[in-house]
Length: 296
Image (cartoon, rainbow, N blue to C red; front, side):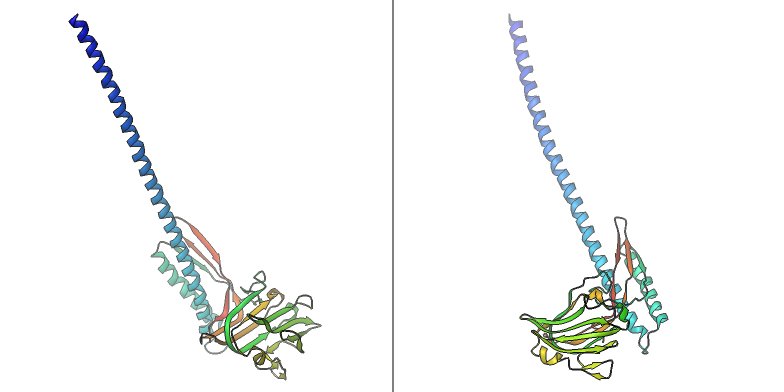
């Protein structure tokens, strides 16, 4: 009888131990799953942070390269015209030197930098100077005075007709102050000058229009009334239907802040920059207006 009792007691202890082992094992598995989940989350988070950091760095580098390239083109143009007329050899040599230096600098950041030069082209009056650029845009805002506003269209075959008019307008918070409309009419530039409500003058020109100088084709007097109609300042100069014409322009004066402004576009360049790293490859084509902004 004692042996039977002892055997039953042994069986009870073994059963309890198994249950405890199962509980311990289950708890250990649960803890393991929690730890593994936390570790995976940390790995994913770290990976995302690294990826975002890489993207942010690449955005900074490409933006920096774009700004540097734009400024280099402007400086190259200025260097090539230092003696008056444009010297293409000086222009090209300046850009080649930039390409070599930029390649070395970006290599230190882990990038392969390639720069493909582009010849100078005639500029449209669109925002980026290309035929497919934005037609309606603002050249500059918050202007106090404009001392120089000149437009030249040397090839009238590249100026639209009466249904495709190029417009330069001056506006403020109240609306239109002044506008200049131009279109090709039988081989001449038909010009209409208006204020906020009516036409104040019509003229014809062969190519050159000096608004602030009140001259057409360098010699013919005209009354554009620009200064009188924009007196008081705090206005914007805008282009409408810019793809209707190819030509040159220059706008210069002072902003309401007192800072001078210059926007001059005689040519348009359209270089390509390419930046490659172990993680990505970025190619960007970037139109550059020449001489550019704030170039005296």
